[in-house]
Image 1 (cartoon, rainbow, N blue to C red):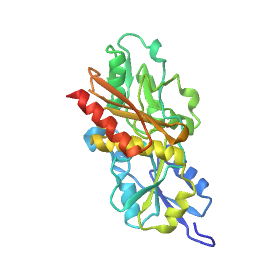
Image 2 (image 1 turned 180 degrees about the vertical axis):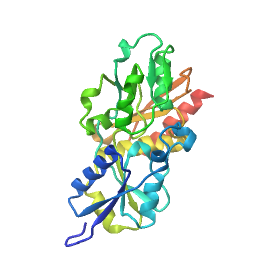
Image 3 (image 1 turned 180 degrees about the horizontal axis):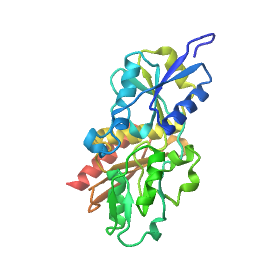
Image 4 (image 1 turned 45 degrees about the horizontal axis):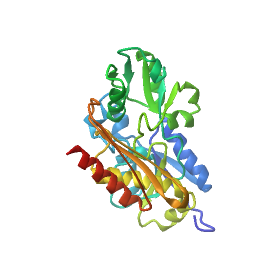
Length: 291
């Protein structure tokens, strides 16, 4: 915020415990006067249908974004993994304030302790495809809802899969039986990162968000999102990507495209200094391999 500004930043967010934690975290980092604007999304309204059946990528963010565009809020705080690869017109991903553990986590059992034919709870085709490739004997059941709902349903399965960052942020890290390394399960694009959007013409909000942006996390997320944009996929397609930043600002990234049944899992790796070019090059490699 500019010096002497008395503007109250209105932060649009979903109403789940995790979403509220994230919005409050951003408000704390901004250190300015703010208030939360709670928005219900289509993904919140329908907690039983598979995500791909109700619109795929964007079902948890569209209404939040629209509240900012309509002027009902100034900022939108998201789990960055929920964002479509192409930012909604009129908005800008102005800050990636921090990134927690990007890995997926098993609750209920370690992978190597799962019995033959174990039943796994997850609504993610990306998670299902990678687990099926490792363990073709596994069976899968749909798992939707907020973190509390998912944990409450854990007893119905031999194990469930959730984002490690979600559990850590809610103080539930002790529920994790195993954190799956990217070599075992490549995370979703931007998993573990926070994403904050504002209107492209809101100069004051842009300045405020620039002050809390984590340049390293943002660069990694930009490379992963560039891969997803080039692929043209979303959370209804089994894809994953994970980038890390090396010395000198070089980006090292792994990417994946799979068949939902795990019969084909194609991976590619690359290093580069331009996040957009790196994302496009890994997409091209994977598409070439799939022909």
